Length: 525
Image (cartoon, rainbow, N blue to C red):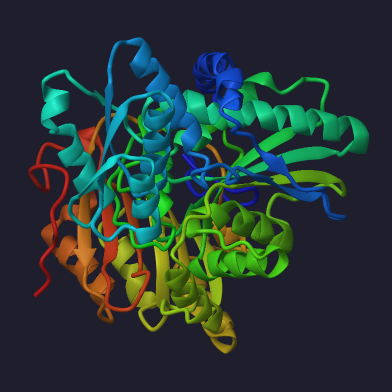
């Protein structure tokens, strides 16, 4: 599962095994080999990264937005379109929040093909206009990417075999295209290592559905020269779009609610191509909303360029890693953050960045705890009752394999003057609890792979005081929590939106299933 450097979130009989790493590396090598085939093809369309000069602290950016689509996704689109063209297809169909659709529309025009793009009706207008500017047909469907995905798969041309469906991130050709970024990073980093001689090299990537991370991670981890300094690859996830974190915790795609300004990462289910290599990640940063806003502001102030939310994720992650020394760095680190997109409506940028309408997490201190709770009925409810006076921002519970202990990570938003009282309230009820140092609640580290067995339930909660506590009381009374080996809670991203609870059962606990199917809202009286 996942852990951090100093505290174990999920303790299991074995951490990452050699067999797990071997399997991940085998898949990574296959991904990298396919990416390498298309490096020159992508460059022939004048798609290249632009690198800034390293600052005094060793930090630089790799800009993947300087192309006709203003986003990196054109790479995967070009490779997918070329392979479809070689197979005799002349029409491409996809679903997209915007950037992948623009990339596929551009690729189709370059290769003399037709493109049909399903887009959420609430997608940014600048992205819809970009798609249309390349001559593609746009079909507005629903309010979410996943609704578009379902409709795109039903397209009559696909059903008739007259068109190729191109998944925006969970597609081997798309992963291969994004992996070409990895080879450009390798070239740049090798030159920098020779000239600067750092003690460590770090690459920071945004993660949504995982296509970019799967491609770049595969190349970097399978091709990094052994004689060079250690390389770590860190993913950054918007806390309001946690599908990739849940997938890494559970070992398979798990549906989550999304409510983020980083619309390029607004996916409910992460891709299996990412999961196949995800344990090669050296860390995962769950970035708070205000840290993302700060990164967008800072980049505009220094460069004049307005990045979209997803485009600034890596910058925000890199900033909190440096500020809190999350990865216990040596004195010399060469760090590269990838800028992934800059398609954002000017009005939305102003609304989100200049007049932030979401919950400002800087108003209160974020304090995290790792707590071990006995595997007995009612223990989670006991914990919540002990801290009911405090505002929980997130909670993750995972049952230890072969143990009578469950691991709980909980994050609070609490005024500075109440931090000590909160710590005492937790410690008095659960003596084994440990307070995380500043920023550590954002960092998760790689661990054992989850199992394919089991099921999950997604619960939507209204944004009302005490809703989570009331939910757990009801589940405890039902006896449901005695069957649960995983629980995730996150508060609403903005006032009036839904909080979410994701509840997982192991296969052994399914003799009396909680629900039929994967998703069920819980009605609270």
